[in-house]
Length: 340
Ligand SMILES: O=C(O)CCC(=O)C(=O)O
Ligand SMILES: [Fe+2]
Image (cartoon, rainbow, N blue to C red; front, side, top):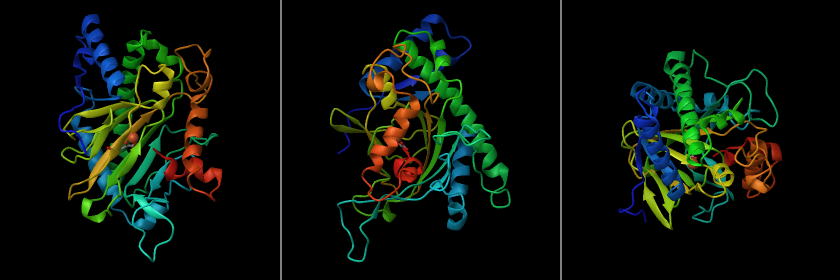
């Protein structure tokens, strides 16, 4: 059961981001962020600098895209894309609850649909995190209704992800400029999500099952009023209210490892109990594929040391894949099951 008593910290970023910020006002925010991520792995932010109009336009754009015919979505399939972009459909995997007699072994455990974009580069580069984005044709969805607002929000959320990374770095006592050591060409994926209304989900189905994010900073926009996100804290689920112009920030496993356990990567899940669809958008701001832990100068061991960002990402996709027998590794590295 979600706990009614616990709430996540709500941090005002103005004393850090505004032109009048002083060293002391910045230090206060750095300390607040450190405390929040050390305790919860999550916090919410106001005065984050992303214009409300950009947030609204993004949500409308996602709604528009999710309504296009299924065959047009399949033509932009994430599973067929070599660099983790495009459309995913509900997740199929083995699940213990209610298998109707006529069903196959696989049922949908998650009912969401998602569309991914990332940092665009002309060439598709191994191991499949950099490459061109795909977009619906302008005849299908005019650029002003999808591509333009999505791209503009992507740039905003990139800027905010960078600021949050710098806050976390400074919270560990390093200069914020350390960021430039592992973010020359960072992997920054943006996942736009649509959860169906509660009535169309089966008992036991989640919007997103409990998981941790595996990489760096996540910046999450929830459509205002469409609650559903819950964060685990000491065995209890804390509901995270979907508030207008309030973003959710969390740290992934890579940050927890790199920080030597100072920062937490908390489990979270989504259950849309509402009778309306729920739109959200998560930006996963990782780092350069060849980067290793910047806090220990590459001298450490394991996840906290000499593994690169690419190693960590690929390892995570592979381990999730082991649940699904009979598929090829390539499908794993690209597949929805292995997306966040
Ligand atoms: O939609 C949400 O509120 C959260 C999504 C999420 O946790 C994820 O995609 O990793
Ligand atoms: Fe997540």
